[in-house]
Length: 281
Image (cartoon, rainbow, N blue to C red; front, side, top):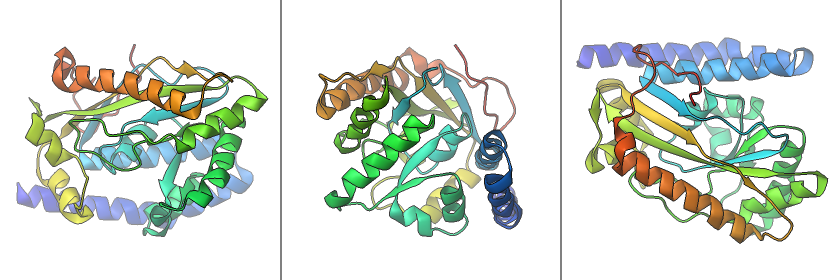
């Protein structure tokens, strides 16, 4: 078991180094001379490759709404959520400023158009919201982890409403929707995850990255379900807090069904380790 984990770790290192040496320069060239489609597919391939190496098997239930201006608001369980979502569709993420300093991941995040925010600095919120609105107006699907941090995979934490104001800003130029998204890590090595198992897969609190990464490489493959629910149309009468509450209510209900209900029997499409399935339903 441990020898295979070491081989997977070596494969992950080679993959990340290869993307840093070849993928990042290629993305820079594509941003200057290539098409938007070519740029997004390189990013999607990066996330899919990472999921395959970490043996994260992802199934999408539903898909992002086919509307011109959209914000996605998922719950947040782990650092792996980025690749779980990013391997499914072209997306733009809001991330804490520290991510921009991380080796390999930082340069890729910047090239993917990630919007960085300084945590705890409320004076920076209006500028970040303006950036989010600009991305949405040009057709980017913006991802907002409204909890602001990761949870243990068993319960939904408080949603912060500050950045929902970006949807209100974008509303000035046309219709805007915010779509609730639920991420649930369901099984490990084919067996349903209980409360303790979900906490082990999650990355939260004062956990450090290296032990969590090693746990993913060492133990069995993890099945993850991503559920896209009906989007909420933003109106002038809504406050950002109204919008935040409506989205959280839907996510809380869906997560309860996935984690504690019959949806725990949902299996990923396909049998290959690391498969990211095509959107279903």
